[in-house]
Image (cartoon, rainbow, N blue to C red; front, side, top):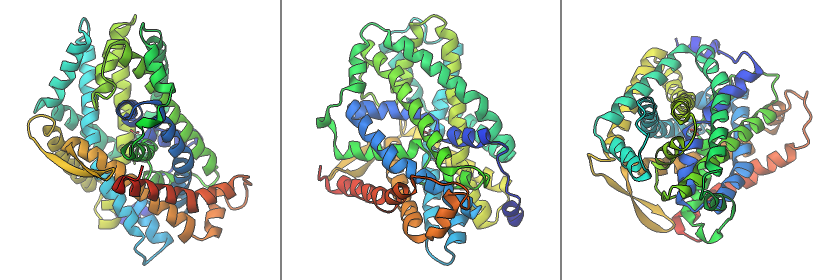
Length: 459
Ligand code: PFF
């Protein structure tokens, strides 16, 4: 079973398929749920600038590094390190990715469950006639409910497992190609409505006028962590996807396209949300509920809002699904290729375990009181378990990215690296020197600095 899986590697059938699947992994709740709420928490424009800086100097090179490892090794996150550097501890990088994937998917499934639940709220027209306070109460009522969010989480996780059992081509490619452009179209329509709301100016200023005094060590760490999260980097997802990319494709261009698409959607989501946040007097630092509280107000203020609300939450659920499958794939691949389980058993066991952890996290939003400490900026902070898991993933992904950069920059041979990014010498790039410099020095040093700054609170 194991060998069969390794030998018959499924591939993507077209150029669009690869980009659609990689962009499908990148574009998800990270862009539309997480980016706005952490931007709100850390004060807006200055945070966004640091985020963009992280994307360009660290995220983009790491994406190309992961593609390179994957396509070179023709294997998933764990086996790839074993193949490229046998009998060394480098495979532990893949193992770190396994733990990170487990952590992320546990809460990702819960938030995706909220999204699914909002599809039904939209269908039953539950937002209509509600003021901002009532809509806030509606979100609070959902997440603190012991049962309802878990039911939707279970449904979402079952869908994720179903796609994973379908295999690469049939599963991933089919879904992401058509639906992501549609989501983009809706976000742009929401932008137009939000920026024309009375009182939206303050929100636009919040997005575009940086106030650097608000930048703390935690903010910088979050910007870095989110750059990894949003681009699906640091845990081997793009290694696995890289292994499916055909030998003729230009890896650098693909990485650039995915990065631009992902970043554009996040910024457009911010532009839909912050003008509305200020127009409706919502607290920008409201936390994980920001999108769920803000956008129903916008739907209430636009013609066709009923339909747009349904479509938006439906498409956001699909965007979440094309991301969650890429996370589950990392965990399943580990069980299949490392433990020799068959795919079905691996998928079912992984899904049940991750869902159980997520359900517990959901309970800590209301029913169970669990607060954990975390060192941030040289100070020990207290986090509810749900937020604590989100903070953990923002730490784990850059640590994974650090090792991936070191591996590609210093461990893999230069001949292998050059061969892979130039497709065996066929392509000539003017940027390989810059890429190497970013890979060897800039990315690992900036990650290290940000982590140490978080621990010691220098800035
Ligand atoms: N990039 C996804 C999002 O923004 O929603 C989340 C994600 C997927 C993170 C895959 C990490 C990953 F490996």
